Picture 1 (tube, rainbow, N blue to C red):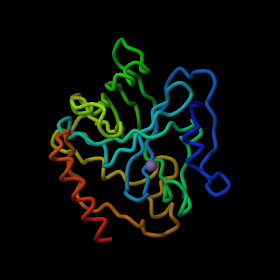
Picture 2 (picture 1 turned 180 degrees about the vertical axis):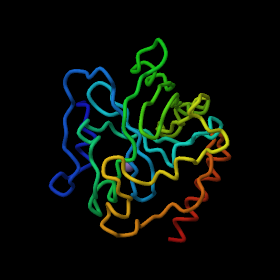
Picture 3 (picture 1 turned 30 degrees about the horizontal axis):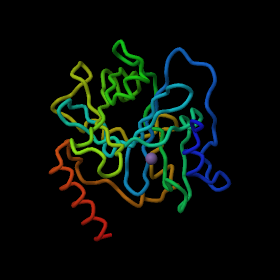
Length: 231
Ligand code: MN
């Protein structure tokens, strides 16, 4: 399967301004990373790490936490082209991911440890250092393993994004990055990018932590379905 086939299949490039993109050739010395704040069905933060000519991508459901004890759910999504890393703007309603995209952070990343980043990702546990404008220092992505009873249900794409304990950590201020609400590319807020329109879903509730426990996940999905019913 071609690396970006899922990305291409999900989008109609005659309707969205998102780049078609292709797998980049040659490897840059410093691997790039970006975070795009995406006001779609729910406001989330799309974390993208350059690897093998594409951006490996996760939709982080809440602002990245600076508290190592406050983990964030990060849902693995399809690889994106490197061209996507500069995209900011509006994805039309009705298109995949319809909503407003803001370039929220950018910089370089370095995989940690002796293993290749490809092997670490395949194993579901990767540690890395970010040198971004907002996200800095050590971070980890840890795949939430299936429960012991295997073969039941669909394979899931849930990971946890975890801040490592270092000087960039703020254990007493997990949500410190919420204050950063402008684009690192244009300085614009989401509302300004959307042309003055208030985002249709405004994440005004204080973010809560995500844990791997099934009880917490059930509570979370119950909350979600309640919310959906209200809308
Ligand atoms: Mn997204």
